[in-house]
Amino acid sequence: MNLFAKHFPYVQKNFKSYANIVVWGIGANIGNCIKTFEKLFTTLANNPNIQIHSTAYIYKNPAFGYKFQPDFYNTTIVFSTTLCVRAIFSLMFYFERKFGRGRIRDFKNAPRKLDIDLIFYANKHINSKHMILPHKDYHNRDSVLLPLKFQLGLV
Image (cartoon, rainbow, N blue to C red; front, side, top):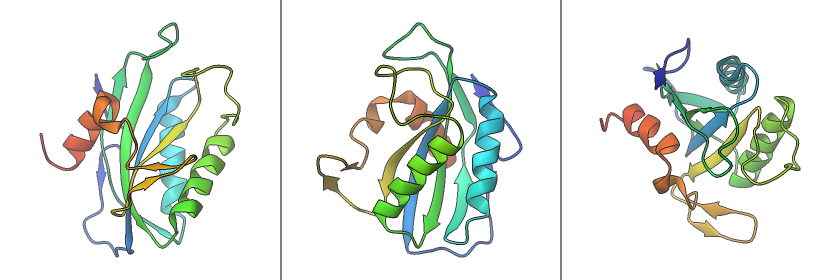
């Protein structure tokens, strides 16, 4: 099911673009997920090192992995930034904690208030113990592909 909110979808028509283009996949299934997404959008929009280019609609889909939990809400955000990839990772973890997600999960695929995945950062390809870019599983997830294809005008 596709849902729409104030900033989902969103397209900034006249914007400055920083050097590094970033794609985040965001998801949540606890609390008011759409409100969380809107607060995240506003927080990003107020960051002087980030310029939001666009967002997709919000895609509501059944949980995968651990299936005995509420449906997930997912979307994608494309923005440019002056921040390096490590700073973007730090910012992701900060936002997840700020919006109520602990860094230690009860179990893999546990319910959460906010999950942010770094799908792409510039044209970087990284394969290290703590970072894989592009995201190793994005191409297998409708929760990323369907909103992103819409956002990029591919559907």
